[in-house]
Every structure is written in structure tokens, then in C-alpha cells.
Length: 93
Image (cartoon, rainbow, N blue to C red):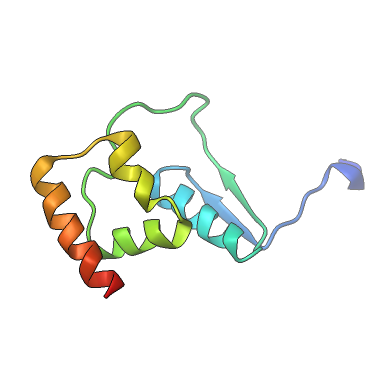
């Protein structure tokens, strides 16, 4: 039997640290909601994930405060950059 000092409790348990699990954990953390993310893979998966980004995805990235880094630090498509700038202007207006 495990001792009580090795037991951890949380409000939310997230299974999988893909794009959705990581985003959910970040958003919950901003609201100070305790959460634990469980991932079965030991190493970081380098396969493409989350290859498309829609309006809801952009809003979630903005809510986490990482939107400005997505296209500057990770990379961008020239056409997408123009479309997203127009869309971002529309969101802010």
C-alpha cells in the first residue's frame, strides 16, 4: 500500500499530451485549476500533429498567450501569414 505522502490529487486528469491535451492543460493552469497530463510515450513525438489551425484554434492560442510565437518561432506559410493577419485584425477590432 502506498503511503499517503506519495498520493497526489487533482481536479482534472488529461490523457495524452498531444496538441489538444497540452492546450487544455495550459488553459486550465491559467485558471489555477489543478491538472495532471498523462502521456504514454517516453520521448517527444516529432511527427506532425495539429497541422491545421482554424478560428477556434487561433482563439485558444491567444488565450494561452502563445499566439505571437506560433508563426514567428515555428514557421509560417506566406499565404497563411496574410490571411491570419487579416483574421487577427478582425478578431481584435
